[in-house]
Amino acid sequence: MVPLGTMGDINPFLWMGNLLRNRGHEVTLILAATFEKPANVHSLGHSVLDNQKEAILKNPQLWHPWHGVRILFSFAAAATEQIFHLIQACRRFDMENVILAPGTAFGARLAREKLRLPLGTVHLQPCAIPSVYEPPAMRRGFRWMTGLYWMWRRFFSFMPTPLDFYVRPGIRRACRSQRIRPPKNILNQWWHSPDGVLCLFPSWFAQPQPDWPMPWIQTGFPLYDRAGPNDSLQVPDDLRKFLESGSPPILFTLGTAMRHPGKFFEIAARVCRLLKCRALFFTNSLTPRPSSADIFFCESYVPFSWLFLRIRAVIHHGGIGTLSQALIAGIPQLLMPLGFDQPDNAARLVRLGVARILYPSQFTVRNVAKELNALLTRIPIRAACETFARRLFLEDPAASTLTFLENLSHSDERSL
Image (cartoon, rainbow, N blue to C red; front, side, top):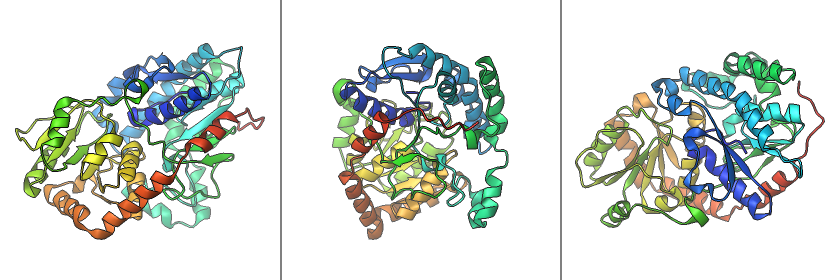
């Protein structure tokens, strides 16, 4: 398993790894050095990908609308050969081997082509499956794409993408070293494995489209985020005391990857003073700490599946892990999407009636207070939150996910 990304990307692979381990399979994770040993790796085996991921997370341009794409894809391209060699080293000749990876783990695709191993592409977000029938709402400036006739959208889909410009050189080098013909179009040829595509989100969150890659299966949100051996709960004592000392707070977070939150927490503190509410700030950055007994800063990993049952609402970036935990907890969400999959995730939540969006330029004290007040007081929003919480509670994606994983086989179809 090659879960590239932060904890929101790693947790679904830990969920699958534990499902497989409980069925008697041997599981090995290939992790970035930044996340060498997450607390919830349990007894899964793991190898470490030596990379510059921490330096990437500290780069303030990571969240720029254009530079962020270049930085992310350049990192993915540079890791291609390392991932390939780690998969090659982890391969067992006394048993069948299967690879699970997101589309950005190009070394996993190279291992499929070179070593002839089955590869399952795992997509955590709907926007990872480009469709001419439902273009992802990636940026506000690209909303005009949704109005184009589908034939014109198909024409645009075959044009070179940032993926080709930033990734192709690294993939070509890696392919030449293994004497494998590189793809001409990354998105159309190497993004999805012809062996199978696993979509870890429910159909009511993203409807299947006619041009989704075959074969695919759609299961549901993994909703796994526990920490510690045997899923034991480790919550700081001071956090417990804060939660028990007053009314349920509002949670503010921009995810584990954010190192440059700007004025997000400063505005959040002013909003809380204005609305006279308590707040939890989850951040890894060196954010100025207001001296207030009603605001608690937390840098420790705390499972949102536990925490979200103890808060009133969450204001966040639109990460797939955070939003899915908020959905099953039945709490409203205010989203400030920054880039990558976040604008598309946010737009889908708004359509469900459980969230509101404020883009960074709109994230002011007045706007945040107005939208947060609406989320907390309007009955239709509360009813929508309860409806989707019940739906998620009744869903169980484990069985269908296991069926997909245990039946992966190498297809003779060649996409090159």
